[in-house]
Length: 380
Image (tube, rainbow, N blue to C red; front, side, top):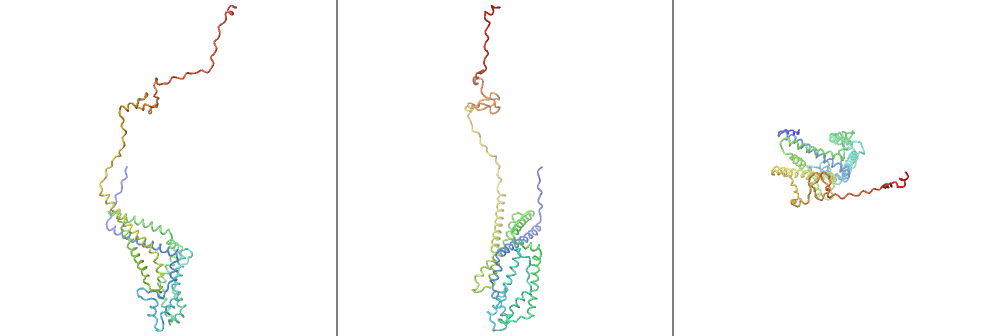
Protein backbone atom coordinates (compact mmCIF):
# COMPACT_ATOMS: atom_id res chain seq x y z
CA UNK A 1 0.00 0.00 0.00
CA UNK A 2 1.23 3.50 -0.85
CA UNK A 3 2.15 5.61 2.17
CA UNK A 4 -0.04 8.71 2.46
CA UNK A 5 1.57 11.96 3.65
CA UNK A 6 0.08 13.62 6.68
CA UNK A 7 -1.35 17.05 5.80
CA UNK A 8 0.43 20.05 7.28
CA UNK A 9 -1.57 21.94 9.89
CA UNK A 10 -1.79 25.62 8.96
CA UNK A 11 -1.07 27.88 11.94
CA UNK A 12 -2.20 31.45 12.49
CA UNK A 13 -0.25 34.62 11.87
CA UNK A 14 0.09 35.26 15.61
CA UNK A 15 1.82 31.91 15.98
CA UNK A 16 4.31 32.94 13.31
CA UNK A 17 4.97 36.33 14.93
CA UNK A 18 5.45 34.93 18.43
CA UNK A 19 7.72 32.05 17.48
CA UNK A 20 9.56 34.19 14.94
CA UNK A 21 10.33 36.67 17.74
CA UNK A 22 11.73 33.82 19.83
CA UNK A 23 13.93 32.83 16.89
CA UNK A 24 15.20 36.41 16.62
CA UNK A 25 16.07 36.47 20.33
CA UNK A 26 17.80 33.10 20.06
CA UNK A 27 19.82 34.28 17.06
CA UNK A 28 20.99 37.38 18.93
CA UNK A 29 22.01 35.30 21.96
CA UNK A 30 23.97 32.89 19.76
CA UNK A 31 25.66 35.82 18.03
CA UNK A 32 26.65 37.24 21.42
CA UNK A 33 28.07 33.87 22.51
CA UNK A 34 29.94 33.48 19.22
CA UNK A 35 31.52 36.94 19.55
CA UNK A 36 32.57 36.25 23.14
CA UNK A 37 34.11 32.92 22.16
CA UNK A 38 36.15 34.55 19.39
CA UNK A 39 37.31 37.46 21.55
CA UNK A 40 38.18 35.37 24.64
CA UNK A 41 40.16 32.87 22.58
CA UNK A 42 42.10 35.76 21.07
CA UNK A 43 42.82 37.32 24.47
CA UNK A 44 43.89 33.99 25.98
CA UNK A 45 46.20 33.24 23.07
CA UNK A 46 48.02 36.59 22.97
CA UNK A 47 47.68 38.14 26.48
CA UNK A 48 47.02 41.40 24.63
CA UNK A 49 44.79 42.90 27.32
CA UNK A 50 47.28 42.70 30.16
CA UNK A 51 50.23 43.89 28.07
CA UNK A 52 48.22 46.80 26.67
CA UNK A 53 47.12 47.86 30.16
CA UNK A 54 50.70 47.93 31.34
CA UNK A 55 51.53 50.19 28.38
CA UNK A 56 48.68 52.61 29.18
CA UNK A 57 48.79 55.80 31.20
CA UNK A 58 45.89 56.67 33.47
CA UNK A 59 46.84 60.33 33.91
CA UNK A 60 45.96 61.42 30.35
CA UNK A 61 43.04 59.02 29.89
CA UNK A 62 39.75 60.73 29.11
CA UNK A 63 36.72 60.33 31.36
CA UNK A 64 33.57 59.54 29.35
CA UNK A 65 30.89 62.22 28.96
CA UNK A 66 33.08 64.91 30.55
CA UNK A 67 35.70 65.69 27.92
CA UNK A 68 38.34 65.89 30.64
CA UNK A 69 41.32 63.73 31.40
CA UNK A 70 41.88 62.21 34.83
CA UNK A 71 44.47 64.87 35.59
CA UNK A 72 42.15 67.74 34.65
CA UNK A 73 39.27 66.18 36.57
CA UNK A 74 41.33 65.89 39.79
CA UNK A 75 42.82 69.35 39.32
CA UNK A 76 39.44 71.02 38.89
CA UNK A 77 37.46 69.09 41.48
CA UNK A 78 39.81 68.13 44.31
CA UNK A 79 42.82 70.46 44.28
CA UNK A 80 42.42 73.98 45.68
CA UNK A 81 46.08 74.96 45.92
CA UNK A 82 47.08 77.06 42.92
CA UNK A 83 50.70 76.04 43.33
CA UNK A 84 49.92 72.46 42.35
CA UNK A 85 50.85 71.86 38.73
CA UNK A 86 49.22 69.38 36.32
CA UNK A 87 52.56 67.60 36.00
CA UNK A 88 52.53 66.87 39.71
CA UNK A 89 49.08 65.32 39.49
CA UNK A 90 50.12 63.24 36.47
CA UNK A 91 53.08 61.88 38.40
CA UNK A 92 50.91 61.01 41.39
CA UNK A 93 48.23 59.31 39.32
CA UNK A 94 50.74 57.25 37.38
CA UNK A 95 52.40 56.21 40.65
CA UNK A 96 49.17 54.49 41.67
CA UNK A 97 49.75 51.80 39.00
CA UNK A 98 46.05 51.10 38.65
CA UNK A 99 46.47 49.76 35.06
CA UNK A 100 49.13 47.34 36.29
CA UNK A 101 46.82 46.28 39.15
CA UNK A 102 44.01 45.52 36.66
CA UNK A 103 46.48 43.75 34.36
CA UNK A 104 47.39 41.38 37.20
CA UNK A 105 43.71 40.56 37.74
CA UNK A 106 43.22 39.89 34.03
CA UNK A 107 46.23 37.59 33.96
CA UNK A 108 44.79 35.67 36.91
CA UNK A 109 41.52 35.23 34.98
CA UNK A 110 43.39 34.04 31.88
CA UNK A 111 45.27 31.50 34.00
CA UNK A 112 41.90 30.27 35.25
CA UNK A 113 40.65 29.88 31.68
CA UNK A 114 43.85 28.10 30.65
CA UNK A 115 43.48 25.64 33.53
CA UNK A 116 46.69 26.76 35.25
CA UNK A 117 44.80 27.97 38.33
CA UNK A 118 41.54 27.19 40.11
CA UNK A 119 41.28 30.35 42.22
CA UNK A 120 38.49 32.79 41.26
CA UNK A 121 39.53 36.40 40.75
CA UNK A 122 38.44 38.74 43.57
CA UNK A 123 38.80 42.52 43.85
CA UNK A 124 38.09 44.02 47.26
CA UNK A 125 37.72 47.69 48.27
CA UNK A 126 40.56 47.17 50.74
CA UNK A 127 42.94 46.55 47.83
CA UNK A 128 41.95 49.89 46.25
CA UNK A 129 42.33 51.80 49.51
CA UNK A 130 45.63 49.99 50.09
CA UNK A 131 46.93 51.40 46.80
CA UNK A 132 45.93 54.87 47.99
CA UNK A 133 47.73 54.34 51.30
CA UNK A 134 50.82 53.26 49.43
CA UNK A 135 51.09 56.56 47.57
CA UNK A 136 49.55 58.82 50.21
CA UNK A 137 52.90 60.42 50.94
CA UNK A 138 53.53 60.95 47.23
CA UNK A 139 50.11 62.59 46.85
CA UNK A 140 50.77 64.87 49.79
CA UNK A 141 54.20 65.87 48.54
CA UNK A 142 53.24 66.54 44.92
CA UNK A 143 49.55 67.50 45.00
CA UNK A 144 49.06 68.62 48.61
CA UNK A 145 46.36 65.96 48.90
CA UNK A 146 45.67 64.38 52.27
CA UNK A 147 43.71 61.13 52.25
CA UNK A 148 41.75 60.96 55.48
CA UNK A 149 39.76 58.14 57.00
CA UNK A 150 36.53 59.66 55.76
CA UNK A 151 37.87 59.56 52.18
CA UNK A 152 38.75 55.90 52.57
CA UNK A 153 35.32 55.14 53.94
CA UNK A 154 33.68 57.00 51.06
CA UNK A 155 35.74 55.07 48.52
CA UNK A 156 34.94 51.77 50.21
CA UNK A 157 31.19 52.49 50.28
CA UNK A 158 31.19 53.56 46.62
CA UNK A 159 33.01 50.43 45.50
CA UNK A 160 31.27 47.99 47.81
CA UNK A 161 28.20 47.16 45.69
CA UNK A 162 29.77 46.94 42.20
CA UNK A 163 32.74 44.94 43.46
CA UNK A 164 30.46 42.63 45.45
CA UNK A 165 28.44 41.96 42.29
CA UNK A 166 31.55 41.20 40.23
CA UNK A 167 33.05 39.04 42.97
CA UNK A 168 29.80 37.09 43.29
CA UNK A 169 29.81 36.28 39.57
CA UNK A 170 33.48 35.33 39.72
CA UNK A 171 32.88 33.04 42.70
CA UNK A 172 29.83 31.44 41.08
CA UNK A 173 31.69 30.54 37.88
CA UNK A 174 35.18 30.04 39.32
CA UNK A 175 34.58 28.62 42.77
CA UNK A 176 33.15 25.28 41.64
CA UNK A 177 34.30 22.57 39.23
CA UNK A 178 31.17 22.96 37.14
CA UNK A 179 31.65 26.72 36.85
CA UNK A 180 35.30 26.39 35.85
CA UNK A 181 34.42 23.69 33.32
CA UNK A 182 31.76 25.95 31.84
CA UNK A 183 34.20 28.87 31.51
CA UNK A 184 36.89 26.70 29.93
CA UNK A 185 34.38 25.16 27.54
CA UNK A 186 33.46 28.68 26.40
CA UNK A 187 36.97 29.27 25.06
CA UNK A 188 37.47 25.82 23.51
CA UNK A 189 37.00 24.71 19.91
CA UNK A 190 33.96 22.69 20.96
CA UNK A 191 32.15 25.95 21.70
CA UNK A 192 32.47 26.85 18.00
CA UNK A 193 31.02 23.50 16.97
CA UNK A 194 28.11 23.77 19.41
CA UNK A 195 27.25 27.31 18.30
CA UNK A 196 27.27 26.34 14.63
CA UNK A 197 25.01 23.34 15.31
CA UNK A 198 22.62 25.54 17.30
CA UNK A 199 22.56 28.06 14.44
CA UNK A 200 21.55 25.31 12.00
CA UNK A 201 18.88 23.94 14.36
CA UNK A 202 17.47 27.41 14.87
CA UNK A 203 17.37 28.00 11.13
CA UNK A 204 15.56 24.67 10.64
CA UNK A 205 13.05 25.62 13.34
CA UNK A 206 12.47 29.03 11.72
CA UNK A 207 11.87 27.30 8.39
CA UNK A 208 9.26 25.00 9.91
CA UNK A 209 7.47 27.94 11.53
CA UNK A 210 7.06 29.71 8.20
CA UNK A 211 6.12 26.50 6.41
CA UNK A 212 3.34 25.58 8.85
CA UNK A 213 1.86 29.11 8.60
CA UNK A 214 1.53 29.02 4.83
CA UNK A 215 4.63 31.08 4.02
CA UNK A 216 7.60 30.13 1.92
CA UNK A 217 10.38 28.50 3.90
CA UNK A 218 13.01 30.67 2.20
CA UNK A 219 11.94 33.60 4.39
CA UNK A 220 13.78 31.96 7.30
CA UNK A 221 17.07 32.66 5.50
CA UNK A 222 16.12 36.30 5.06
CA UNK A 223 14.98 36.63 8.68
CA UNK A 224 18.19 35.18 10.10
CA UNK A 225 20.28 37.20 7.66
CA UNK A 226 18.68 40.48 8.75
CA UNK A 227 18.91 39.51 12.42
CA UNK A 228 22.65 38.89 12.07
CA UNK A 229 23.30 41.81 9.76
CA UNK A 230 21.99 44.67 11.91
CA UNK A 231 24.05 44.15 15.12
CA UNK A 232 27.16 43.01 13.26
CA UNK A 233 27.01 46.06 10.96
CA UNK A 234 26.67 48.35 14.00
CA UNK A 235 29.60 46.58 15.66
CA UNK A 236 31.69 47.00 12.51
CA UNK A 237 30.75 50.68 12.36
CA UNK A 238 31.82 51.26 15.97
CA UNK A 239 35.07 49.40 15.39
CA UNK A 240 35.81 51.55 12.34
CA UNK A 241 35.00 54.75 14.22
CA UNK A 242 37.16 53.67 17.18
CA UNK A 243 40.04 52.76 14.90
CA UNK A 244 39.78 56.04 12.96
CA UNK A 245 39.68 57.99 16.24
CA UNK A 246 43.25 56.97 17.04
CA UNK A 247 44.46 58.93 14.01
CA UNK A 248 43.42 62.20 15.67
CA UNK A 249 45.12 61.57 19.02
CA UNK A 250 47.69 64.19 19.88
CA UNK A 251 51.33 63.19 19.97
CA UNK A 252 52.56 62.23 23.42
CA UNK A 253 49.10 61.19 24.65
CA UNK A 254 48.89 57.53 25.59
CA UNK A 255 45.86 57.14 27.83
CA UNK A 256 43.99 53.86 27.48
CA UNK A 257 44.30 53.77 23.69
CA UNK A 258 46.56 50.67 23.69
CA UNK A 259 43.96 48.86 25.80
CA UNK A 260 41.03 49.87 23.59
CA UNK A 261 42.99 48.85 20.50
CA UNK A 262 43.67 45.38 21.91
CA UNK A 263 40.07 45.10 23.11
CA UNK A 264 38.47 45.77 19.72
CA UNK A 265 41.01 43.81 17.63
CA UNK A 266 39.03 40.49 17.58
CA UNK A 267 35.81 42.30 16.66
CA UNK A 268 37.24 43.29 13.28
CA UNK A 269 37.27 39.66 12.16
CA UNK A 270 33.99 38.82 13.91
CA UNK A 271 32.08 41.75 12.43
CA UNK A 272 33.38 41.26 8.89
CA UNK A 273 32.69 37.51 9.00
CA UNK A 274 29.14 37.85 10.31
CA UNK A 275 28.29 40.67 7.87
CA UNK A 276 29.55 38.55 4.97
CA UNK A 277 27.58 35.53 6.16
CA UNK A 278 24.43 37.67 6.55
CA UNK A 279 24.72 38.98 3.00
CA UNK A 280 25.20 35.42 1.79
CA UNK A 281 21.95 34.35 3.48
CA UNK A 282 20.06 37.26 1.92
CA UNK A 283 21.42 36.49 -1.55
CA UNK A 284 20.66 32.79 -1.12
CA UNK A 285 17.06 33.59 -0.13
CA UNK A 286 16.61 35.81 -3.19
CA UNK A 287 18.11 33.18 -5.50
CA UNK A 288 15.91 30.37 -4.16
CA UNK A 289 12.77 32.48 -4.44
CA UNK A 290 13.50 33.42 -8.05
CA UNK A 291 14.31 29.78 -8.84
CA UNK A 292 11.07 28.56 -7.27
CA UNK A 293 9.08 31.20 -9.15
CA UNK A 294 10.69 30.22 -12.43
CA UNK A 295 9.96 26.54 -11.85
CA UNK A 296 6.34 27.30 -11.03
CA UNK A 297 5.82 29.39 -14.19
CA UNK A 298 7.79 27.16 -16.58
CA UNK A 299 5.68 24.87 -18.84
CA UNK A 300 5.70 21.20 -18.06
CA UNK A 301 8.06 19.20 -20.20
CA UNK A 302 6.74 16.17 -22.10
CA UNK A 303 8.55 13.02 -21.27
CA UNK A 304 9.62 11.34 -24.49
CA UNK A 305 10.68 7.74 -24.73
CA UNK A 306 14.28 7.30 -25.74
CA UNK A 307 14.83 6.72 -29.45
CA UNK A 308 16.37 3.34 -30.08
CA UNK A 309 18.70 3.00 -33.07
CA UNK A 310 17.14 0.92 -35.85
CA UNK A 311 18.87 -2.16 -37.24
CA UNK A 312 20.52 -1.71 -40.60
CA UNK A 313 18.31 -2.74 -43.48
CA UNK A 314 19.62 -5.72 -45.49
CA UNK A 315 18.24 -6.39 -48.97
CA UNK A 316 16.12 -9.54 -49.19
CA UNK A 317 18.25 -11.11 -51.92
CA UNK A 318 21.44 -10.48 -50.03
CA UNK A 319 19.88 -11.68 -46.81
CA UNK A 320 18.79 -14.93 -48.42
CA UNK A 321 22.27 -15.46 -49.80
CA UNK A 322 23.88 -14.91 -46.38
CA UNK A 323 21.40 -17.01 -44.39
CA UNK A 324 20.50 -20.69 -44.30
CA UNK A 325 18.22 -22.81 -42.21
CA UNK A 326 19.23 -25.21 -39.47
CA UNK A 327 18.79 -28.82 -40.52
CA UNK A 328 17.55 -29.65 -37.02
CA UNK A 329 15.36 -26.80 -35.72
CA UNK A 330 14.76 -24.92 -38.97
CA UNK A 331 15.76 -21.47 -37.70
CA UNK A 332 17.68 -19.00 -39.82
CA UNK A 333 21.40 -18.94 -39.12
CA UNK A 334 24.45 -17.54 -40.96
CA UNK A 335 25.45 -19.56 -43.97
CA UNK A 336 29.02 -20.00 -42.78
CA UNK A 337 27.95 -21.38 -39.40
CA UNK A 338 28.93 -24.99 -38.80
CA UNK A 339 26.73 -25.28 -35.72
CA UNK A 340 23.28 -23.90 -34.96
CA UNK A 341 23.36 -20.96 -32.56
CA UNK A 342 19.99 -22.03 -31.16
CA UNK A 343 20.08 -25.81 -30.78
CA UNK A 344 23.78 -26.53 -31.31
CA UNK A 345 23.23 -29.13 -34.06
CA UNK A 346 25.92 -29.59 -36.67
CA UNK A 347 25.12 -28.26 -40.12
CA UNK A 348 27.06 -30.72 -42.35
CA UNK A 349 24.77 -32.81 -44.55
CA UNK A 350 25.49 -36.41 -45.60
CA UNK A 351 26.93 -35.23 -48.91
CA UNK A 352 29.20 -32.82 -47.09
CA UNK A 353 30.34 -35.46 -44.60
CA UNK A 354 34.03 -36.38 -45.13
CA UNK A 355 34.95 -39.93 -46.07
CA UNK A 356 35.40 -42.12 -43.04
CA UNK A 357 38.91 -42.86 -42.07
CA UNK A 358 39.80 -46.50 -42.85
CA UNK A 359 40.34 -48.55 -39.75
CA UNK A 360 43.70 -50.26 -39.45
CA UNK A 361 43.78 -53.46 -37.44
CA UNK A 362 47.00 -53.78 -35.56
CA UNK A 363 46.55 -57.36 -34.28
CA UNK A 364 48.10 -60.24 -36.36
CA UNK A 365 45.68 -62.33 -38.38
CA UNK A 366 45.87 -66.11 -37.77
CA UNK A 367 47.59 -68.18 -40.49
CA UNK A 368 45.35 -70.52 -42.48
CA UNK A 369 45.80 -74.24 -41.75
CA UNK A 370 47.08 -76.49 -44.58
CA UNK A 371 44.91 -79.41 -45.69
CA UNK A 372 46.09 -82.99 -44.98
CA UNK A 373 48.43 -84.52 -47.56
CA UNK A 374 47.52 -87.49 -49.73
CA UNK A 375 50.25 -89.61 -48.19
CA UNK A 376 48.59 -89.48 -44.86
CA UNK A 377 45.29 -90.37 -46.42
CA UNK A 378 46.77 -93.36 -48.12
CA UNK A 379 48.26 -94.62 -44.86
CA UNK A 380 44.85 -95.15 -43.44
